[in-house]
Image (cartoon, rainbow, N blue to C red; front, top):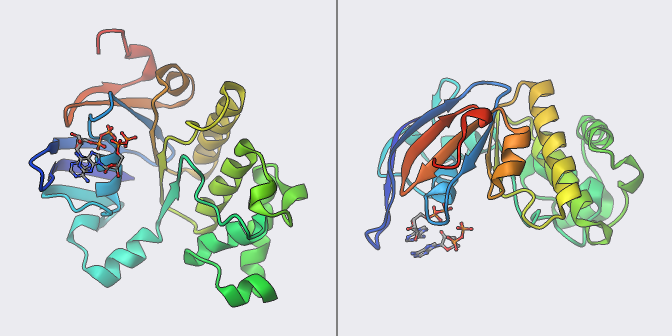
Length: 237
Ligand code: ADP
Ligand code: ADP
């Protein structure tokens, strides 16, 4: 469960990106974060894992208040938050398998990329995740040999390899065609339900969000202007 409570962020430039944002995401629920450019969506996602430091407010990941953690504890907390990115952020010269395994530590060492030495339990988990995302036959291919949709599947498997308690997903389909976008959204939402994982998806495409997510949170000028089921979202919000 994620709970964001009265989160505020004012950048040094004076831009007030978040003006007291509150909402929660229960386990297994996928929330689509929508709003016009500049609404504060990226800032919100970044404040949750403290890539951006909020000025005020709290972020609770289950019992843990992420905003109150010191450096070492924050590093451990970030291991509990899986990230999925628009441009996939794979290591192109490494194999699909190695990219998934890198979710374990956040990287694959130069040495590991030659020797392929990983604990067997990590390798087993990576294989079953590749199976879940439909990439078993591509495990040994280099990441740069894959299509966009396949790369995003690797990105999803990598995020799951770290056994996250929360997924933060930034525009996962912005670089994909409409059909592949729907497949990726279906996969993400199915996996979150299977694993009882809460997720926030920053997503531009409102109809796509409405078709797949459980709930929509609408941001505008740093404030929550809508929070409800996709079916309640009308033209004028
Ligand atoms: P998006 O809306 O897709 O997040 P933006 O163009 O708003 O993309 O932002 C791209 C990058 O520039 C981000 O890293 C964001 O934090 C940064 N950025 C956005 N607005 C400003 C600004 N006014 N001053 C400095 N950096 C900014
Ligand atoms: P969105 O993701 O919804 O497009 P952002 O979170 O990127 O919105 O931006 C929200 C507001 O904060 C905008 O006014 C933007 O210009 C500003 N902003 C974003 N990143 C930065 C930054 N690094 N420095 C200064 N202002 C920023």
